[in-house]
Length: 41
Image 1 (cartoon, rainbow, N blue to C red):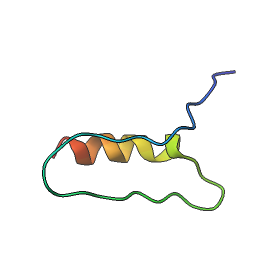
Image 2: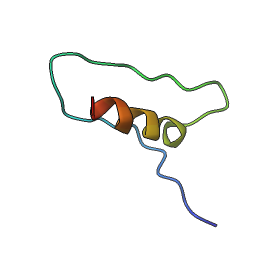
Image 3: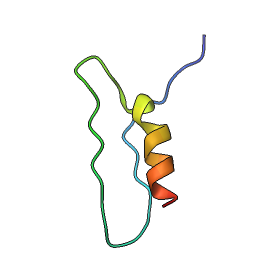
Image 4: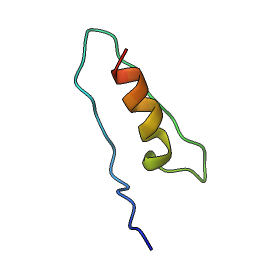
């Protein structure tokens, strides 16, 4: 079984920030793909 990295993450970028919020039963790894996508914009 693969161990998930449950730590928060941060991507360096421009002057605009975005806070991603997961649901009650969610975790940061579920939001990482969206964070990576937005960081590339």
